[in-house]
Amino acid sequence: MLERSIDILGDLVGFPTISSDSNMDAIGYMAEILRAAGARVEILRDASGQKANLWATIGPEADGGLVLSGHSDVVPVAGQPWSRDPFAMVRQDGRLYGRGTCDMKGFIAACLALAPQMAAAVGDRPFHFAFTHDEEVGCLGGRALAEELSRREVRPAMALIGEPTSMQLVEGHKGCCEYTVRFTGTGGHGSSPELGVNAVEYATRYITRLLELRAELKARAPEGSPFEPPHTTINIGALHGGTIHNVIPAEAQLDWEMRPVNMADQDFVKETIARFVAQDLVPEMQARAEGTGISTEVMGEVCGLLPMPENQVRDMIRGLTGANGVNCVPFNTEAGLFQQIGMDAVICGPGSIAQAHQPDEYLEVDQLAKCLELLDGLIAAHGR
Image 1 (cartoon, rainbow, N blue to C red):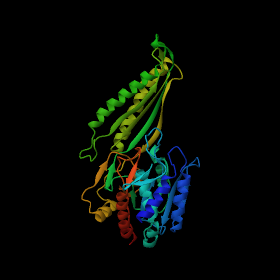
Image 2: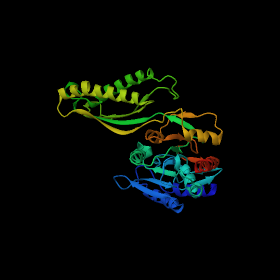
Image 3: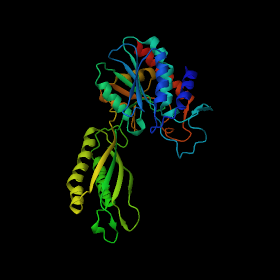
């Protein structure tokens, strides 16, 4: 199956599924392979009709299934110093080069290659495939799929998310919340700053409050937290505003993110900053000029994956691989979405996260082989 997986991966890399573009051709290709293996395939389009999730099932409509999950989208290549065509996979010196080989079309290719084997081995518990859109820009497809699955009567029991972990077993990561905040003030000449409402100054005060919260969050780290750092973090990503030295800026935009270790911290930060805006900043701005204010756009709020004392898929993979330990990672995935709707979930996939999003991204062939070996074991164990 290794050569078959490499062939499929080459085809998948050839679909330039950058998050800003449609993924429909790639989804159609995956659907063809799965239908040929006997899967029941659903293509779940988003509101635009240009993006879709794929949900497919091999086996009965029954509870207890195993979900194999991956995202179809990749990050942009613009501005990166690639030495080769990023959308034409090249095999060289034991590596497979191309955008998405590591993150995370290699795992998807392995799942597709083994679909006929799953059909031959399936018993009372089905195999499911969940291939989503827009994971790289807020897990938009994963969130929509989780909402859809939560409304259905059939309940899968386990989910394996094949993000690149160098085939190490991962049972936890923080959440990821991203926000864009827009400040609307009034302009004017810099010689009379008191006559305008300086949007950049109010953005700076907002940032100052975030930094105060960041310090407070360190003291809220849960005892025995498995994460590094152990507490919820806040990062100021970008601040845009103003034009020149002597003009009062009328507009500003702030991009920031939070990586919560739990929902309590997430709620604490959101409620505290909302209260600061509503009680302090906005009344002061509007007392000086009508039409001023602050608005917040939620770019993405994706829950974390919490390590659990009981986890069927974790224990199954540990038994198959002989892994002594289980890790937590700093990056975010769709795994928490599956956990949130009642599944045991883990992350384990081919390739190093150090290669993800990089120019000349690659996946080592032996990593793909190890992924196939793990999936073989899961098929045998789950299909019984």
